[in-house]
Amino acid sequence: MKVLYLLPFYSALIAARSTLQRQELDVQIPTIWIAGDSTAAPGGGGNGTEGWGQYLQYSFLPSVAHVQNNAFAGRSARTFTREGRFDNITAGLKEGDWVIIEFGHNDGGTPPVNATVGDTGREDCPGAGMFSPILEAPSYETDEYTGNQTCTTVFKRSDADYTSNVTEIVQTFPTYLKNATEIFLSKGAKVILSSMTPTNPWEFGNYSYTPTIFPYYTWLAASELGGPSAGVYFVSHGAYAAQAMKNLGKTVVDANYPLDHTHTAPYLADVVAASFVLGVKCGTSGLQGLVSNATSRLEGQVLGTCLGVNATLPI
Ligand SMILES: *[C@@H]1O[C@H](CO)[C@@H](O)[C@H](O)[C@H]1NC(C)=O
Ligand SMILES: *[C@@H]1O[C@H](CO)[C@@H](O)[C@H](O)[C@H]1NC(C)=O
Ligand SMILES: *[C@@H]1O[C@H](CO)[C@@H](O)[C@H](O)[C@H]1NC(C)=O
Ligand SMILES: *[C@@H]1O[C@H](CO)[C@@H](O)[C@H](O)[C@H]1NC(C)=O
Ligand SMILES: *[C@@H]1O[C@H](CO)[C@@H](O)[C@H](O)[C@H]1NC(C)=O
Ligand SMILES: *[C@@H]1O[C@H](CO)[C@@H](O)[C@H](O)[C@H]1NC(C)=O
Ligand SMILES: *[C@@H]1O[C@H](CO)[C@@H](O)[C@H](O)[C@H]1NC(C)=O
Ligand SMILES: *[C@@H]1O[C@H](CO)[C@@H](O)[C@H](O)[C@H]1NC(C)=O
Ligand SMILES: *[C@@H]1O[C@H](CO)[C@@H](O)[C@H](O)[C@H]1NC(C)=O
Image 1 (spheres, helix red, strand yellow):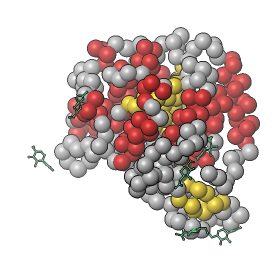
Image 2 (image 1 turned 90 degrees about the horizontal axis):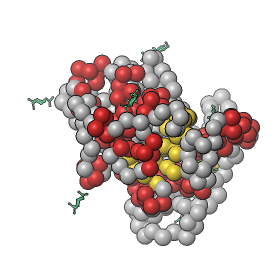
Image 3 (image 1 turned 60 degrees about the horizontal axis):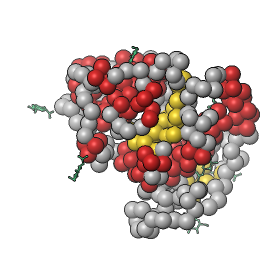
């Protein structure tokens, strides 16, 4: 399987720099990396909003774990791959680290097939995918649902740049997640595949949380990689965040989506971070052992309680 695009030259330079930065930190302390979009990123979606990843650090004592938020606004699993942002994490990764991967808000749509215009560069190939760089032989049925799909398109960096047309074989969402996860696992890290945050569940009057396909695909990728026994965990972050927003009520939640239905004000971003922590504490990953907060202190009127295993299945 060939991917006909070039990683930016500078990714090697960034990699060298971040390795140096890592070596300055205590090698005994695990780093918890976050790969994601604006809903997790520093500065959120701008205009005073904030990403939940900025608040995760407060649930870990500085002597126990360090949080490195590499989420970046506007990114999808595809863009994060193409721009070398997973590589940037790989460059700084050490054995015992954790990587949280959470995408979906920017992954929707379909790249126009063989078109030289119309590809935004971030929509994934639709479908469940199945490309695996380590498990080379496909071990899945090749029906329309589980077979690997790719889309060939021409990605143009900008209207002004007519020399940048690059033919790109676009992978599906689960394929990008699995590809990055397998690289992180090979470095001795463990990975949490986390489902995307909800859009404002009070947007249409009454509370309503209907996950998109991406939470399911996130669960599917974790499951196909072997799940907990392989060091890959699924956190139903979307469901936990939605539960907290249900408890907070329409007035508070509406007020904390000041820009649009996607980007949270700092208060709600903090709650969304806490809902991730509750999801971790209610799950099976070893990351829960690093959290400084007791489950009993997290559960309550805002965050709610642990969701049943079946209740967390996104679809
Ligand atoms: C790469 O990772 C380092 C941390 O290791 C971070 O400071 C830097 O901003 C990242 N660069 C990009 C382009 O993501
Ligand atoms: C966001 O901030 C920018 C710059 O201050 C402003 O131009 C824009 O109108 C704002 N957008 C919204 C939706 O408030
Ligand atoms: C896209 O281009 C490839 C290679 O030229 C060709 O095999 C394929 O049939 C094309 N697909 C469509 C939908 O035009
Ligand atoms: C699916 O992916 C595998 C592994 O990369 C590859 O060998 C196979 O040709 C792919 N199948 C299709 C139908 O693209
Ligand atoms: C790039 O694509 C545009 C159409 O968007 C086309 O007009 C232009 O000739 C292409 N440039 C190259 C170098 O292929
Ligand atoms: C897998 O990840 C590596 C490292 O980020 C990247 O270079 C490669 O293109 C990815 N493969 C696919 C099929 O996306
Ligand atoms: C919201 O729920 C209340 C009580 O269940 C109901 O009376 C009302 O019609 C609902 N409103 C909307 C917009 O669905
Ligand atoms: C965990 O505890 C710390 C300090 O006791 C606090 O700052 C943080 O907000 C707590 N995290 C959650 C998710 O409640
Ligand atoms: C999940 O649901 C299935 C089917 O209803 C049931 O057999 C199973 O025991 C449930 N698992 C848990 C952990 O509740």
